[in-house]
Length: 259
Image 1 (tube, rainbow, N blue to C red):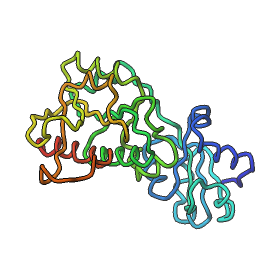
Image 2: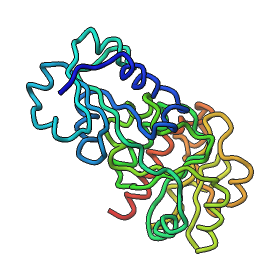
Image 3: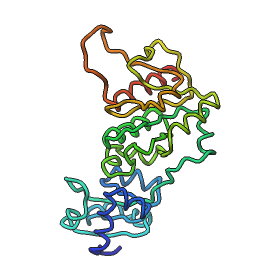
Image 4: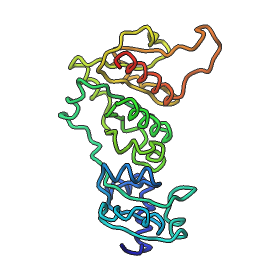
């Protein structure tokens, strides 16, 4: 156990920026649940907590490369949250590049693909709901928000420890999946009613950008266009659904067909 230096505080706070997360290969998680979930699944570089937390979790000292005991005032300076928690940790970022071998392993799975989803809260929510519905892999376009940004990690409520997230050029990935006869689904206003559609146990579900939807290049690869209808069908309703809500409805319907 050691005290924390100004340089260490500066280094941890720098992880709020994507550039420094990439350079160091680590990300920040704050709060008891997030830290505990990640400690079970990921390599912990730095574990920082106030005295009360250490007193309640003495075994945690063996789970990190570096451990720091700090005061509540120091946690105020260190935390990236508006309301600092008792514990904060940095973890080694898993490999987010999608290899051909890993992509091939998706052929018999249900996978979610995010095409330019930019809001951190939406990305975090989608990771969390994928965890709930047993979708273990998400593939993102380079324009999708960084899944290891602090706001995204916080929104996952610990699911980031159990769902693998990859970044790649979606058209290339989806074309490979389609050529292997893996169905590629996407949600569109002009699609077929999802509740009347034939849905497979495997496949890729593409969800698009908050404002623009699925990009034209990806749209051309989607083999099954789905539509989530309003109720009643002729009602005057909102123009569209939030992408997180639409993802939850879509994945839930796929899972409902095959309990």
